[in-house]
Image 1 (cartoon, rainbow, N blue to C red):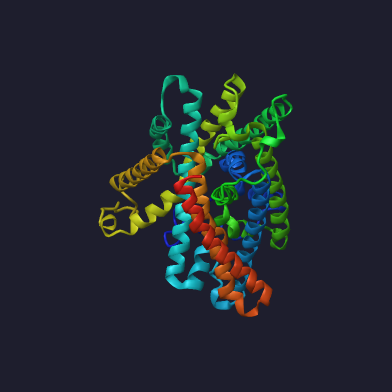
Image 2: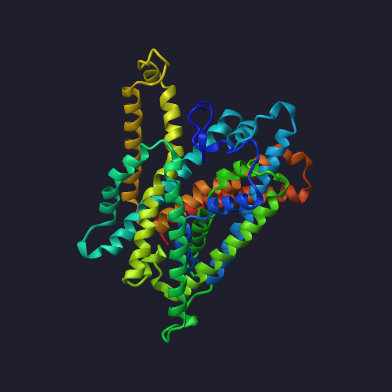
Length: 425
């Protein structure tokens, strides 16, 4: 998500990352995987525990296929608008919302992406707090205590305007994710190979009906990065190959998700925690990986929250009182006081996210709530709605029926999934 400081008329998060289309197929494939995979994967074993191993695996596959299909719908909608001379400027998710539902559609789309980005940022903080409290549990610090302990550093990092300065930490966090998954799988295999393991104790389908949508919400959250679909496709040198690359990426990621969730639940059964790293033994290798994960997320949190800062600052700069602030006579740039106001707004936003994170009862419940509501609306409901609006008259009966099914199911899933996440399972 490139920094777009000079463009104040669009939401930066929703802009196309490249208008020239210079990315190779390998670069695009890597970008797709990075945009999809996040910390939510470490909650998948818990989702399999809640839903059952068979239902969990089937749910992840269905969510993966549905997300892939809806991403293609979004591309079709954009291509349809681009074919119309008067709609050449429709290049973002927000533009599609505007073309389909006017100003309300644009605001709804951009608001949902804004909330999903905030939700991802809060999930980062909850993950950091729970893992640090697990590592230092002998010191009797709560998860909330650790969240607020790292906030001063997060505020300082949020004042860095150049994302390129933080990109090495993002790479470090991805490496730690891979190492954590490898360590968890190694531990899973050892647990499954142990004498105490009993396959019969692991439920294929849970008897608790609320467990299915709860796990579904976690699965939807794991396929994050939907807002980057148009930007990723536009960045390709050979855009015609995007659907094939997307299929390859989703096939690989879905397979990894299913195996990781399955083996995690097989290893720990009913003792599976909502963050599977909390199940690891308290030895030096586990602690190193957990600390690496936390450190990586501490330095990538500013990257996750950066688009949110830009959106807030765009609204701030358009406000009447901000525009009345004095500017430098030489180049009409902001004064130090104006920049101070922006820094204060960033600090307040980070504190607000930390306060929200401190109130979250658990990583799994929060991830499922965000996935069931905001992510489901973005990933399923809006793409199906846009597709019906723009191309409905030219679609076959079965294509229209499929879009209507996705739209209806997405709405029901959002309502019931939110309910099951709030009341617990």
